[in-house]
Length: 482
Image (cartoon, rainbow, N blue to C red; front, side, top):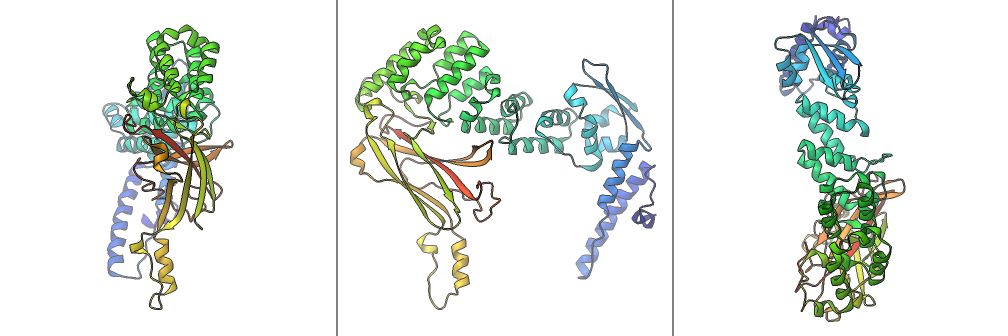
């Protein structure tokens, strides 16, 4: 019988033969492993792909079927009949195992997006493999969750986490976040939330922005790690969201009070007060914040702090991409030589400091080694050995001020480095964010897991490293950064 299987003459008409084949392959594999341990010239004969093909034929042709699935599409007369096999369904799903205890015909109700993929979902039971596209991820995950196919559920969840930056016509991350929240998938939920925060400018310009739920909007606006051009961009986007969703008044109040008006220049504050219909309607909700913002801009922040509590997020900048707060840095061929960059930022967010600039120097080294680990060049050490030691180094990024600390007494600076990946439609998405402690200059663990030697590295775009360095001024004696 085994000989006939190897020759491809086995008749797939019997499920029992499939089970026998599985057992025979397992025993044969164990025997081969035993032989290999004692005989160096041993080999493994693997016909698993043939077996998987035969199992797929069982589903495709309905041979020796002992189970009938009637898949009804919700709110439709459409019914799909699938002939399947109880053993394979029960092996993968305890739900199917329970349903098939006393019956061989199952009637299932599925929404349209799940019903259209049900046969594809069932094929996974027979071959352990499935292709997934962006628009199929949620219905496949829903099916895997409903029928307790845990391996597929985890696989689709990982697919979603790694395809947040993939191109789609309508956008998909907001809907995936809402789905993850509903399903209780905290890992996917956090991945989506982080992506939305780090790529907010892109999300704001997409059609899915207006689909953000009330709770998600409130959650996003509380974060200090939002990446966007400036606070006025965020205010305009929130105004659009309020106008198109018309949420309840308590939500509008909470959202408008989450805008950091102190981060908006006085001229722009005057402009939005005059032109914004939303602000005109709900001016009383934020009147105190606007007045406080104007006061903040009119005096030295240290003087302002004598009379007002500045130990809150209102006076902490977010990750602004504006040139006032940092600089983009594209490093070509980053695996080769040390690179440097100089740029200027504004001393602080207050209009009182708007004309005061600080010069910063950034140094990037692709393979830096501590002095204790650097090779000693001598005749006793071969060139190849020294080259290997250099390859052990890790990327290093240091950002220092070119000015004396006395020139900005009372202020420290949090440095944030964004690493862009996966350019889509001309846009670079942020996937990695490094925050530097205020008392240090070096970015710890910078690209520690990156292989910059590979052109296919996820950290590179067209063999270039896309960075954006952001400087966030913090009045350290008064404000604790969140």
